[in-house]
Amino acid sequence: MPTRRNFIIKSAGLAGTFSMLSFTDAVKAADEIRHSLSPQLNPSAGSDEDFWGWVRESYTVSPNLINLNNGGVSPQPKIVQDAHIRYYQLCNEGPSYFMWRILDQGREPLRSRLADLAGCLPDEIAIDRNSTESLNTVIFGLNLKPGDEVALTKQDYPNMINAWKQREKRDGIKLVWINLDLPMENEDEIVKRFTDVFSDKTKVVHITHMINWMGQILPARKIGDAAHARGIEVLVDGAHTFAHIDYKIPDLHCDYFGTSLHKWLCAPFGSGLLYIKKDKIKNVWPLLSAPDTMKEDDIRKFETIGTRSFASEMAISTAVDFQNVIGTKRKEERLRFLKNYWAQKAAKIPGVKLHTSLKPEFSCALCGFSIEGKTPEETEKILLDKYKIHTVAINWENIKCVRVTPHVYTNTRDLDLLVKGIEEIAKK
Image (cartoon, rainbow, N blue to C red; front, side, top):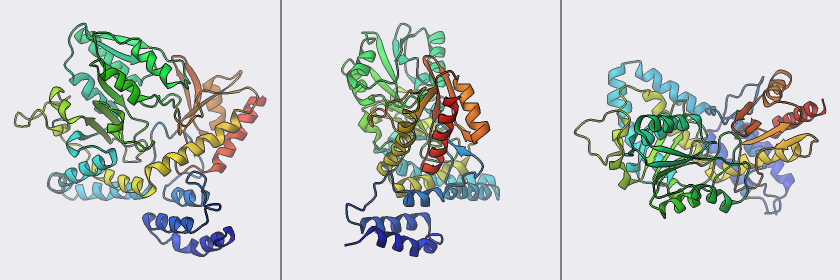
């Protein structure tokens, strides 16, 4: 029977080989070693530091900064950076030729690959630049009349809140606000907060799948089902869950969905995805005008934005490759392991409070904390100045904390330093 000693010897013997393998081949080799172990010795997907060490080497992380604000925007693995640069240089060899006649021909294959990752039809996916663009397309594209109501929370993302406020001001719709006391650990109670504001005039419910401020996961499917039972359409902001949590978009039973691919998919900055259920496409106006010859039920009508970055768009496919090699389920397990690794230790420090549930159904990578006697801004500044740990201070509505967001390249040594910093700040 294979032993841990054999595993270490075998890993050490292949160390030199891994440096010469592609990322894909290295991951396959690692899996072969891991699967050869007995169940008692086989490390879990989340805590296998050898495997995740190889993943870390795929990123160009700074040795002088511990980046724990990956919730803002994620770095790209080197293979994605290289693809982006390669396509960008190709475009500059003859822009109008290589952009429109060569790279643009890759959009339909990319659409299919994204649809496969999302679990939907290619004709339900539009490729755009970020969550704001995709969700604003729906917010401004829906046919709503004065007096129609939209249910949303005060904890939603500001760009979406502002878009709905503009529609309220311009078109006379009514916004009905829900104020969530987070963290919450009862799905039925969360659903009830939404259904309590539903009325005969409610036409749309806006659901943020994961609250960006501190990582609360909302039961989007249950809220959506409750809305559909009342004839209400469902718009989901999936900026922080796509390629982070293991699910398919149709699993949420939503009509509309938007996300940023430069977050958890680690695609080039300024890349996003819009999903609209096939039978709903014809009902949504494009944010920018589409050609008269384009059918109303064609998802591509949302992509007529003129000249864009073909290079960043085509490099999305490489990010999909990277995601598929790791596997979304394994990625989710790792991210939740990292969050729990530091948060469980920090929670035991006197004066430290967590603002995020540690239950798996309510959180994954993102987690907020606060220190008694310190503002979030003060704590964030000390972590950066003294420990070179980059986090973000959150001060929004009833949420005041420091948000910590590791990624797949984060290791436990980084998080040990974070816990040490929190403990020293709390003592003072």
